Amino acid sequence: MDQPLRAPWRAMIRYVVFGVGIAAALVLLSLVLGARPAAAAPAPAQQTLQTHPSQQRGLVGGPFGWPDARTAAMTAFARWCDDNGWTAVFYGIGAETAGVLTAQGWATLPVAEDADFDPRTWTTSGKKKQDVRTSVNKAAREGLTATWSSWQQLPASTTRQIEAISEEWVAERELPEMGFTLGGVDEMRDPAVRTLVAQDPEGTVLAVTSWLPGYRDGRVVAWTLDVMRRTPAAPNGVMEFLVASAADRMREDGVERLSLSAAPLAQAAEGPQANDGVQSLLDLVGGILEPVYGFRSLLRFKQKFGPELHPLVLAYPDPVALPAIGIAVVRAYLPDLSLRQAVALARGRG
Image 1 (spheres, one colour):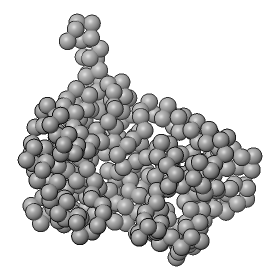
Image 2 (cartoon, rainbow, N blue to C red; image 1 turned 45 degrees about the vertical axis):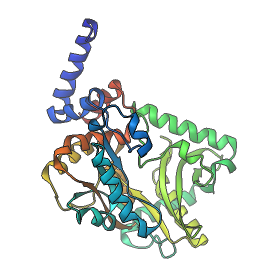
Image 3 (spheres, helix red, strand yellow; image 1 turned 135 degrees about the vertical axis):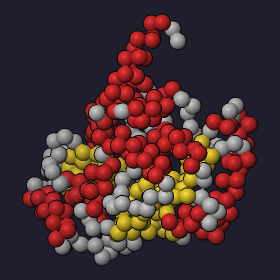
Image 4 (cartoon, rainbow, N blue to C red; image 1 turned 90 degrees about the horizontal axis):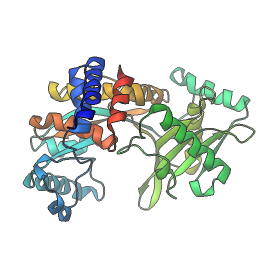
């Protein structure tokens, strides 16, 4: 390393180690300095382009498509990864899907809980939904509106405000928007996606959510919450108002499921501890990201709506790959994390 760069690097390393601890420092520094795990595995035809396949880790979600073809697809994919020196890790998959892998000797541990409910029968009544009910009534008194629309059908003045809100959100955190299981403004522009925008009587955008469609036999039967953004000046309860408004809209449309999605690396209750090493590593990763991205507070927000909770797990074949698994999880969410941003992440945790 060139002499002029040594002092800043040493200062940064000391800062991270003393600020967040040795274990967290190793994870953060590995993200910037170490071998970079892949967020998703390439197609078989692309494998010849990898110069060091033994250093790669594939972090993927579960399969989709015809149910009777999923078991064979997962098994073949895992075998292909192994044949090419990869370690396949399935992240955020349901218990039924994970059963295919545990039957083959894989281990699992919970990493999130998916939250959903049936909007056709959901109401704001009940003690547990008091906060939601209060927020809806407050929004009505203040004249707030909730507009359900595709991005293309929104007025240009509205989309410009949404873009500004998102840019301000990113700037405040000194970190990029997360990817992998989380979307952003680019995904909101998809014609199949719907936005739900909260505005005051003057037309000022206060908050926005986006919703991803779920299909069965070519018909939308479910919507999944993706993006959530609000202005600093938005009144308390505006997000609760938007989700409740979405439920009302979906009830009218006969939609069967409203999914609040899963807060990554957050659980409502303690789940089974498949392996202390993996659990400790993921707890560490979640702890590093929590102060900046607030996964656990997001889960508490979703519980206000009284949803059904479905555990999602991480399935892994070999505990030897634990360090790479932890790094791959963060890299999947933050693939372009820079040195400066890694230090900002450490500062947020300290």
